[in-house]
Amino acid sequence: MAEETYRYLSSTVQKTLDVLFVFMTDQKEWALAEVATAVDLPVSSVFRCLANLEVRGLIEQNRETGKYHLGIKAFELGMYAWKNLDLQTLARPYLEELSREAGETITLGVCSEDEVLYVDRVDSSKVLRATSTPGQRRPMYCTAIGKVFLSDMPSYEVIRIAQTYGLPPRTSKTITDVDRLHADLAEIRNQGYSLDLGEFEEELCCVATPIRDATGKIVASIGVAGPLARFDDDKKEHLIQIMQSTAQTISIRLGYSGNQLPPVKESP
Image (cartoon, rainbow, N blue to C red):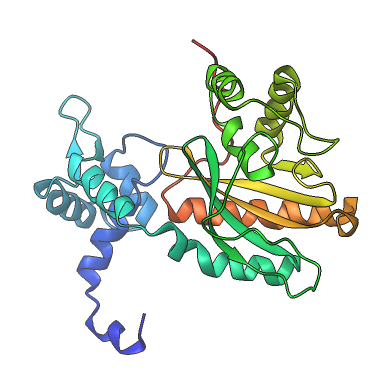
């Protein structure tokens, strides 16, 4: 925000927004006194704020309990904000910072027609580096980013994709058995990241982490890729930490509020 903008700020509007932001938690309903305590304002002031928010549909009051919760207009506003987000533009500065810290090529991928579609890349400054190009597609079963998406799918979807496209070996390390793939995906769900240690290209390593939207759905994945020889255990551990932090930050910008992975999806 430009410095001169602060001259136009209204304390009343700011207090009202503080009250509104109290409801951005997992607690569904708030008593008037609870809101007042949370924002450290007199109950009378908070009541006026809530009344103004309620008349515009951003806050609603439960007539049985007297407590307050977010109104439908807040949901509509959030959905419009989410639809207008440009994931690539939002993520780009975080990818650039991650590339500087990791020293390797960073890719951003989405799931498109049962494949990974690369939508952005930040190159490593090293001569020997990964070369995935935005617009390229890759199979999901043998790439770190792809396995992130598979780990978010129910098992019958994984089986469908495997039966439709097969699991042909790309290298000697490629998983070509559905049961082994399911076991690998279960581990990814549990640990919160995916590894490709030469499964797609013999000497290429990739670590990938999920980006989630406000519903908890995985909508994109960040991958850090480079020559397998440069990815020792210490480096992989470091990469996992900074990637998970970056992915969590982007997810929060997309409205995600959870700290843990969602429950594992079961087959119907």
